[in-house]
Length: 427
Image (tube, rainbow, N blue to C red; front, top):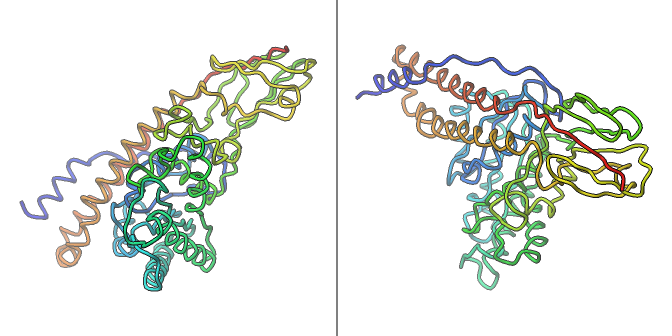
């Protein structure tokens, strides 16, 4: 089958209409209608931190106007992305980008001047290409880290492989920070929070509690939550999910994204369009987000779903929410407690369903880019001389974009208003 026939078959397969964007609902500091490309190597292609970012922005920050596309590519360096950037981004036309390179750029050996020079040159090239292609907002991320227990490498002499390579990655992070300043863009430090998390979590759970994956490089959900946190801060997210105020002598109130359906003294029935970020897994497993969250201050910094209680005439009270009950002092309830700290929430099912749907969407994005769009480069010269082929390429790009938009719309159907109730009982 020739190239032209293959493209026409793909066009027939991806023949769905583009779905309109959701209306604006302000939160965070991304500009209205932002189109965010999450870009990086195999760690990005795992489609974990990219899903957490997307879920947070849309479901938690309430940014229905924001659309996300992940461009992860296993084994890639910053220079590798520079070679495909203009072509591969052309079906999505992002306005905002997160970059996470360096793990492969460091070459898995001690840092030297050549490694630093190559990385700086490649990253500067990437930033210039993005600017030339209309990307106005770039969060320059440092590389992550390697696991201090699981990463093994003999290239570092008397040092452990993990310590040696983390020193390399830290140097690359400093270069990224310098470039972010040069281009007047925000910097997301991914590396140091992962190092800090390991130093806090491993003494609690044991050295074999992996933060950067059992292969030492590719984090599981826990490490990927650290990565998502760094980029969400770089994107300007302030962590305020909402505030519910229950008056023990009067009606309850709620901030935007949450509606009081009915209330009485000490109780409220609510309906919420904005979700807290729902943690997964148990409180000890690395194969989930719950165990690492306390060690990175995730709920305090990015996931504040606050309940305040006024006019409480007792020293403490019991709060019942979503089938769970916890006791708090009057002082805690007056200043506000974080409902996201409850071990289970009424939002868990809908939030996890949305994450699953995002997995399907982002899985398609990987196929679209790696198997189709990136190969447009191989026949670009032929397309210039063949109007029919050029038209087929253009149509295929449009159909792929339409399919991605349709999957996005399908995923968002999982974000339905959640009805829940709160009851405060003086003790």
